[in-house]
Length: 240
Image (cartoon, rainbow, N blue to C red; front, side, top):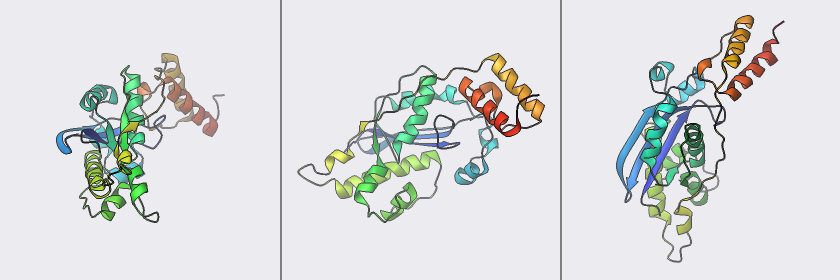
């Protein structure tokens, strides 16, 4: 099994790394199977949070209003992760958001990962739910807090250790391979900043239709401005 790794979890504004934003980062550096350091940051997503996200995470607009942008913390978290593999429950999800942020800042973020969800699918009964909370409960692990990044990162770390203790036992190596980190692949291109004209046109469209949008226009990329413009035109029509 991996003894040195970064247990990682993110809270985000949604499930699509191409459209949604990081809201919170929690990471635990594990050395020799034991927690050695922690990293935690709230991140300002520059948009209003959907009610279902607030309900799920307990994070509110007020909590992140004065938090740093992802551009201000991405170098910190990539440095915290160093060359260690990442570990988490559906770790490719968290990796994809961080890699996108890293690429946008010109940083390299190629990683190997250990997915505790994959392990649960192998070692838990098929009929049992396998989300992080359910898996922890199935293996007798009590959790005090859910859907906050640092607590979920810690839970994934403990779950991995528990699974290894219970199932990494075949002398012929039959189960050993599934506990090892594997290369993660997520391809993403650097986003281009929106032009001044794009933002001016979008603001005029919003003013013309007398609508509010839940995002801060100055922080949108070129693709995000185009996407939002198309959504408004589709719903409200063009300027006449």
